[in-house]
Image (cartoon, rainbow, N blue to C red; front, side, top):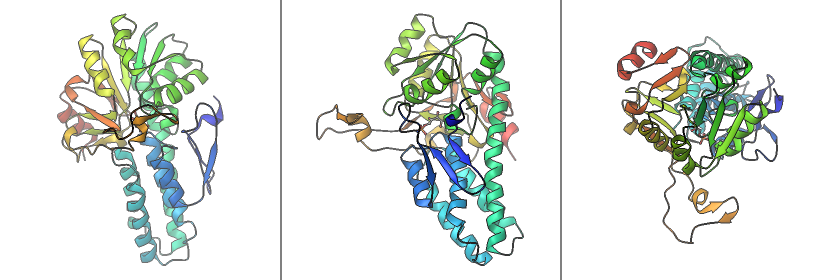
Amino acid sequence: MDERVRSITWDGESLVLLDQTRLPGEVLLEEQRTVEQVRESIRMLKVRGAPAIGVAGAYGLVVAMREKGDLPRDLFLEELGRHATYLDSSRPTAVNLGWALRRVLRKAGESRAATGTELLQVIRTAAEEIHAEDIELCRRIGEVGLPLVTEGIGILTHCNAGRLATSEYGTATAPLYLAHERGIPFRVYSDESRPLLQGSRLTAWELQQAGIDVWTITDNMAASMMQEGLVQMVIVGTDRVAANGDVANKIGTLGVAILARYYEIPFYVACPSSTVDLATPRGADIVIEERDEEEVTHFGARRTAPEGIKVRNPAFDVTPHSLVTGIITDRGMIHEPYGENLRRVFGP
Ligand code: MRU
């Protein structure tokens, strides 16, 4: 696999992000020198996808504090907390960002480190653990989902829940990479995913690089592909799973789930345990990010809607758990009743 596909690189000191807004035309690696730059990279979707922004956020704290080793413990922790709040304000929907930031804060707070230098080492290790775990969790998602990928099937996915959205393997794509490695033939239909085209720019690109049989379609072609009998399964990622099993994912996912139900096609959601949020009771409680209207009024640099038009641009939607066939997680497949099963598997 091409090393450049890695979304996040960390060499123990410096954080390098692959600028995903430039793909597929340009592979641009950008070193992150300040916490402000990390926050902007998350906000601008240079790094995106729920698990990847969690990992980037955790390293963002190390970037923020790496010159602060001379602070005493209490001031170090105070400043660390401020930077965590600042980074968390970059995007609201994916729970992984806040989860990763809180985990680094907790490790620092609970440690016996007496000096800033020691605390810096604690947060560096915490961020590296989150990064390494993300790779491992995605690999396990792949193993749990692998039996679903049977010979010759067509699989539709929406947005990018691939390697680019995580540290490795992806979530929705993990079973696909594993199946491909084992020589199982299958086809993938990658929804374009308007407005920012994560499907055609990113999923199609990374699967093509891996040699997987991938076709990109515009979002409004999904129904027709299903009607033609080309799709036997849908797998998508998610930014947050509520305690009742409702899932938030890229805008348009809800429509795909409704179509899948109509055509009696199984609809699976894949995610690591860090995406399950038992503190949020229902999908309606998930904060949906509303982004800049230019993403809708323009296609690339060209305006495609009239000046002054009223615009909505929610970046995510919520699919009710009743439309979800199963949630593929690193801890196994979760089925109905979701409330009960999520609590049993992910509860304290
Ligand atoms: O706005 P994005 O590109 O960050 O949205 C990403 C998605 O919706 C993904 O499907 C989700 O984060 C899961 S990534 C494994």
